[in-house]
Image (cartoon, rainbow, N blue to C red):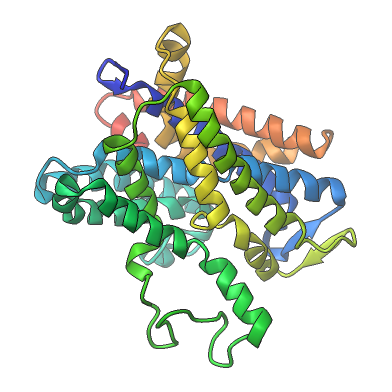
Length: 366
C-alpha cells in the first residue's frame, strides 16, 4: 500500500470523499425531513434529487468506519493503552462542540448526560464509534489468528442481518403489525429481549470486519479487475437504495407526513442495510486505488483529511446558515451542491485553523 509521511494515501482520499458526502446528505435532508413538522416533499423533482443524493452518498458513514478499522484493527496496543488514547481523542472534542451546539441552538443540558443533544443530531456517529473502539481490543486476539474463511463466514452472517429491515417489512405485510410492539421482532427478539440470535454479528461491526478483511486478505488488483467487481456491487447497492426509497414516496405532491414517516422511509437507506453495504464495498474497492501523492494530495487531500473530524463536528453551524440563504434563489440540486461545497470548504478551513491553536487545538478539533 502506498504511504506518504507515514499516512496511508488512499485513506486520506477516502476521508475527504466521505466527509464531503456527509455535507451533501445533510444539505439534502431538509427537502424531505421538514424539521419538527415532519416530512415535506414539494414535487417530483425534490423526490428525484433526494433519492439520487441518498443513492450516491449513503456510503459515507460506513466508509469512515472501514477507514478506522483498516487503520486500527487489530489493535496492536493493550486495552489500557488503546482505549484512553482513542476515547480522549474523540470524546473531548465532541463534548466541547456539544456544549457549543446547546449554547447556540438551545436544548436541555441534562439530556446530554444520556445522549447527544437534539441540536446536534449528526453527533450520533461519535457514541457509535466509541462503542466499536470498546470491541476492537476484545476481538483483536482472534483477528490476529483468524483465517480468511472464518472472516468470510462472519461477513456472510453480517450480510444476512442487513436484510432485517426488509424482513421486518415483509413480516408486517404478511401478518400485520405485532400486537405487542411497534416493529416486528425477529429470531428471539421480544418486548423483554432486544438481543436476538444475530444481534452480536449485526450493525457497524460488519464494517469493522470488512475493513480488516481488505487490509489482511484482499488482493491488490488492476483497475480493470477492480471496476469489473466493484461496479456490479455498486450498481446493485444503489438500485436497492433508490428503488426502496423513491417508490415508497407517495406521488401526490406536495406530500407531507409526520416525522415518523421519514424514519420509516429510510428503511432501504439504513447504514446497515443490504443496498448500502453492497455500494460501500464497491466504493471502497475503487477508492483503494487512489494512491497518487503529488501536489494535489499534499496541498488539498492530506490537510483536509487531517481536519475531517473537526470538519464533521462543526459543519452544521455553517450548513444551516448557508442552506437558509441559498434556498431562496437556487433550484433544489443547486441548493444541495452549493450548500455542501460551501459547508465543506469553510468548515475544513475553520477546522484547520482552530486545530493549529497551540496546546488546545487537538483537544477541540480532534
